[in-house]
Length: 453
Image (cartoon, rainbow, N blue to C red):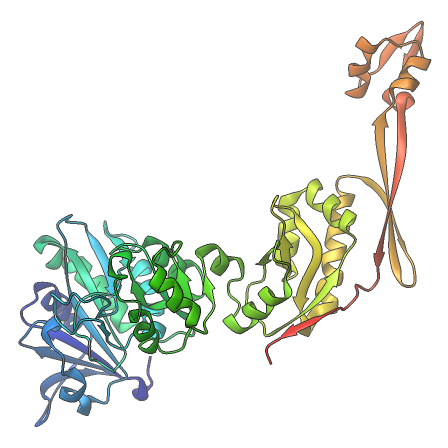
């Protein structure tokens, strides 16, 4: 992160042992320059990072924007300790704010500081990667405590939960590495409602999908419905609301209905990851209410074109080898619609920019799956593909015509020969061949186009 316009101010508390540990690791790792100014006093500088120590605890500071405005920082990062009665060994990060009327640990009630979702997305991924070898859990936490009046995007990054961990040099080094490698990403940004103080679902979503949450309001802080509006206002680029569980608070449900933002569960986020929220909304508007849209592509698109295949063809392929069928969907960036029984509808979407190649590629790959399992013939016509599938089936009537008894049918059905009256009866002699014909439009029809206006 070399851009001087993206300065990161790292604020160290001299009263916090974890903060001091992280400061020492930062100083060890880089060639910092000592600097001083009349407005800011002494501080350290390295590339686009500024390292400033303060006498008081972080949570007690509610004037940092005005106090440190001369740094021209794009972000504040607060390395600090995490305390808990459980004594969990954790590396964590969270935004600051008090969603409810309670404000026991600094800041104002029902208030939030500006979150830094683009930087937090990078931070949670880097924290997980750098911390893999340590015996610490890596997690996001729900929004809590002060300060609550910071308009510079900021977050706390912490070592927990007791003095042994706070002074652990290896843990401090992981935090320091994370901070020094920070680079804003471009995820899909939302706020989240629900869960406890630790938020495993939101953590997994932030690590495994293209979303991140600026503020996370836990269940125990749902007393003030207007807090969700404030949390959204303090989340730059917020485009959706994640609902961790069913919302039972009637006042909160009414408030959510007033907000012009889509609301998604974890499964809905995962199903259409990594698509942007605008195209997601259009896909949901397009889809049948009884069908669940699922995207198997690997990147974002702004436009999709729909097509409809022969349902018998789709059913035949997915029943032949579901794993290969899903691999085919992934290879061709398909967006499909799942029925309640888990099977897929014949209606599908492909990215408009390469619709023809992807849709025909899907058909070709499906035919290959059938060829691996069945005897078939593919007939290419001017405007269609005809697939003739030959199914060999044991015919009891043919077996009886050779004088065989029912107790002998099983051997033939299993591919064994049977001797009867001096004659050898082979499985081929007692099988019937059924021909099933499936027609497909060639090329696939381009139907509706779904795009961002």
